[in-house]
Length: 96
Image 1 (cartoon, one colour):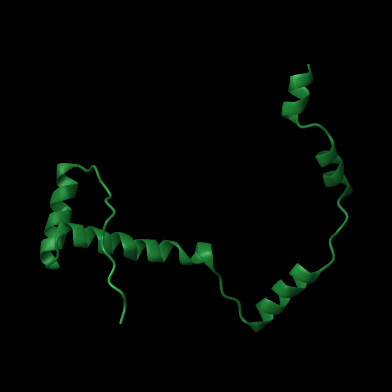
Image 2 (tube, rainbow, N blue to C red; image 1 turned 90 degrees about the vertical axis):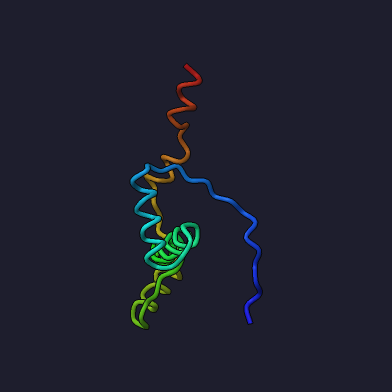
């Protein structure tokens, strides 16, 4: 059985009168309070948005390619090395 959590945080929201009416109508249609409707809707949308930013799935072949890329030896990048050893634009501006 999941532990019940107390709702002790508040989120204020400014909206137009017409937006409020739409939310009230939708909440009434689903037999929920406006707060419940907005919270459920916002959490459902968050669950749609977040997965591809938190985890990704690969099949066996893709996983092997990914692992090979991670385990590959580093490449020499002399131009990048030179760039990182030079003073930045901001550091050069301070000396002038």
